[in-house]
Length: 500
Image 1 (cartoon, rainbow, N blue to C red):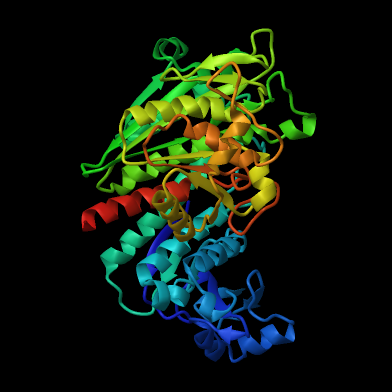
Image 2 (image 1 turned 135 degrees about the vertical axis):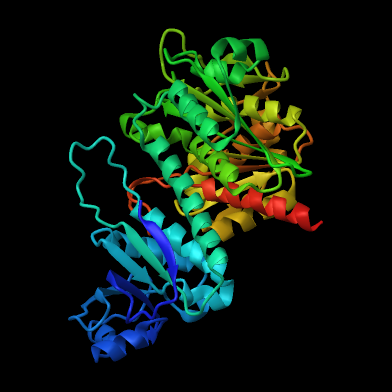
């Protein structure tokens, strides 16, 4: 990972292998462009126009410096319309530029200056560092020879004025903390299920908790049986790899306690309601919500917000065997509520039900869960936006705001209570599927049965946690969503309590 430094050197004078400068759509000169033009004796904007480029998002131009700049090469990146520049625009441009920058030893950039006036220098610097690191991510642990050469070891964040050095360092560190948490979540999701078992996930969380100063407990099968966690046990009973409940606690000393959880199915074959071969290809990613929650706890421990956070993450493998859960079986969940299992491929809600019931017992001020739960949500919202439902509209708005701030946008779907009739069971308190319509809503209604009166919001991240195509700041595979939303929401709650 490269080191980041804040500098007030002039863009044309700073020594680096690559200088990254932005242009707005038009094209219109962004910070550093006029200095580069003066030093090179050429019009960058005219060169863009001559190459049919207008400064739109994802447009770029590489220019040699010919020894006329401190930098050897210039990368001009499009930011889109000036009026639309935001923290996420900077984050995405930095991520896009990072794909080119990795081949250079040192990089300098004026990108944060493009948004400093609108969002403040701290937010702009954090967004740049975060996006740059997210865009630099590669998962190469299983390659005998990595397919690209990484040389980058130093990044200079160029500021327009002599901004407070301590504030700059803090903004850089925050960007690193966010990005490192996401990279770790991506690693967990991208790890093949043959290695990433529930026990592996628990051990990874144990090691992290020891390093970060979090309280840790991994509930074993025997402890889950004693505790009445029938959903986790039922889903995991078809696998030789025993299930776990991973519990993490952060004590920030604040006046409020909040809770998070995530679906941790380390591989989902569908159980006896088995998926087809194509449907199973990415099912190592069915623990994306769990990975995001665990990674968020890592970041929270480093950021130290004045708030207490409990995480209880259920993890199991959903496999077919002679001992597997059968359609028609009834499970007794934590707290005594029962569910009829009509489709063993609707297993995520079964393990989350136990975790939510357990967290509700802790009496937190709010609970968030994230899960790669339903294809129905993907059909409704696609791959860029997660869906959120909950029993508290204020909490839902908080989560949506946190997602927007983090660059992980969501959209509210209705928790339409009248659809509860779709999951009524003749033999148990509730059944785990409804009919083919409103599947994301009926899944959330199932979860709502286990939170009692605690304010709760459910993020369905089936579309956003794993991508088949590379994006602005992720390669094909795990994205780490919604780890940054979790982190930002916790920080926002802590800040709100501090102000009240």
